[in-house]
Image (cartoon, rainbow, N blue to C red; front, top):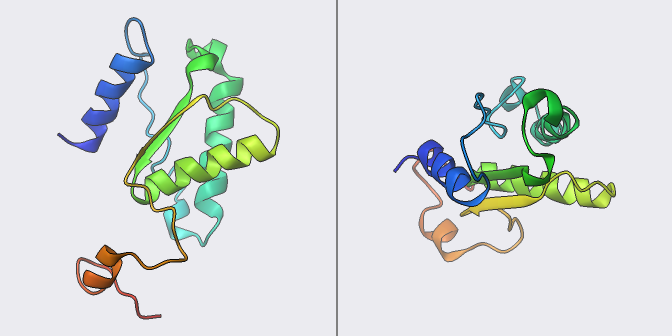
Length: 126
């Protein structure tokens, strides 16, 4: 199952009693080309987009008490980061997180990082 269809299935099962909204928004995809900009541009783009959704919930015809963020790998990192940002700003518009193998540990090398340090488009070299 692709991640996109996995998220759609999770939304249907856990957050909505009826139909999905008429729009689809991959909130944690590069919204404004932030993948071409240096850190922390992607985090701020995702945070701003999520906050916009919450502030425009009536117009979007969604329940603001059921806003979630989620992602896999680096997207999971973005979801966790913007959830922490919202919490630290005293905002509560993010109600749920779905983090699928998120990258959240940048301090301790994991066994898989050491084993697969080279290849698959990644490198531990600076």
